[in-house]
Length: 278
Image (cartoon, rainbow, N blue to C red; front, side, top):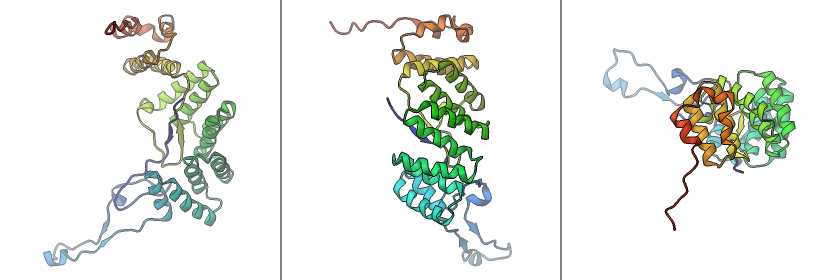
């Protein structure tokens, strides 16, 4: 079983001059160094002496940079210092949890996620990250409950429904799994094409055992959404993984509109025996 833990939250934007803190957005005013304005009447000599002010990075921004560089130990040290200074700051607690999580210190990470939720009972990112701990421990029922709690806090985040879909898949509750993936894709049709992003504060786990069935369920989700192109991609992946029940698509209503497509017929065709060897 392959594991892919994606730090979905943080698209830390690596700009030479300014990196936003949690909750900030980066616009043109923040993305560039601040340059002292020069009057039009100034001579070129005056212009050459314009003062360029480069803001110093905060400790949180330095820690975010360490996370982006995958220097999780360094990041954890800085976040720990920040949490010591502000013990009820949910963002610092959650980020410290992620830094420990990425070092596979799951018990310690869980402690900080729980403290973050206690500090802010509506902090969906941290509640989601609690779910990823239980998912990695294969405690799928606990993961499902955590993801549902996170969705009750924020029902507009595709990653929460996606994680819920993985947890249901782990429980072999395939109908619930596909329903969750369908909701995730309704919010973000490109969800599985990128790692997602929410300021480095939320994790997405993409590890599954039965990959063939998983890809088939994703194909079904895209078929129900009317996205034939993406449906084909995941049907081919299911076939490549040797999914034995691929013929189910012949009787599954989700695929009815596509059954006569040449690409579908090609997928359903049995693999030719490799006769290149005697």
